[in-house]
Image (cartoon, rainbow, N blue to C red; front, side, top):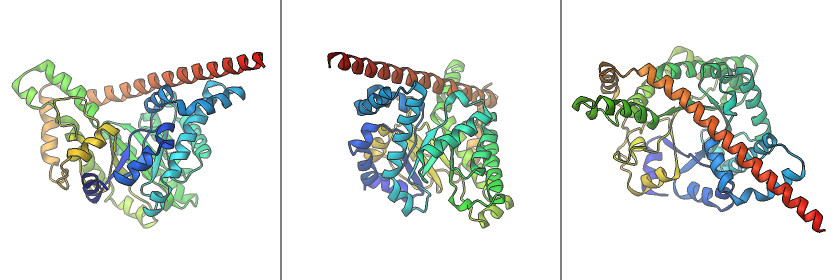
Length: 378
């Protein structure tokens, strides 16, 4: 194993790859990262699948089969993406078994079109879980207001969940409550809650992108000095929330029944500002019981020159809160920032989903034309 990724793993951080494609699976690239870089899970989203389908020849045979069957674009996307997740889940089966279900997880997201539709999200989560049919799959549900009930009901149905698009501390508390409520309902229904796993994906770099743009507009010495710091402060305060909520009496009762903590997952950890260290959102967010999902570029940077200095969250809560307060004093509203980021996050995934549908539709059309031409020639 790489020394830096091993050190990160030893510090209690599970390394997940924020990428998946059929090419990555069949070429052995994903297996190599498992074997050499401590990668113990994978996250996906509509943007990742859109890129994979656009650039991947590995899907050609399946697209041809789907076109021959008369599949529409929604059916095709469903079949292709769930196949990728099932195959990746099989690759992680040994990790899943060795960690008693803690890791070896592969995430697949409900359609972003359902982000404001509670019942639609619940139905889609169950449909995805049934189709993938792997114990180590995680269904990703956005942490919108409408998503909270969906999180509860999906957990209650015995399905493990990756809660995504979390930006605010208040929403994070609501997500933890939704998880615990789901566990309570599952326990009441006789489910073995020790089999359920959940992570809460707290986005990091996008906070800096938004806050730093506002700091640039203010353009005072004080404002410029705060650039590149809000994302870490917000995430560190989220870890404080994690520690508080998962030491409560309510949690201890669930834990006694076998429940596992919902680990914070640091997402959006690729640095957007080139002036910042490219490993910033990894090396400065090290703490036990966390997951860091990284694009391959970030993972390779960590492997090459990441300095793992042990726990870099402990003892930072006071200074993190001071920083958030300083932003408020400068006129940057925390609530406005996180609300905007949630809305933008959903819109970005909507755009990627549309791109994915268009890409697959084009591939289906080309396959149908190719088949028709071959029939004519015959």
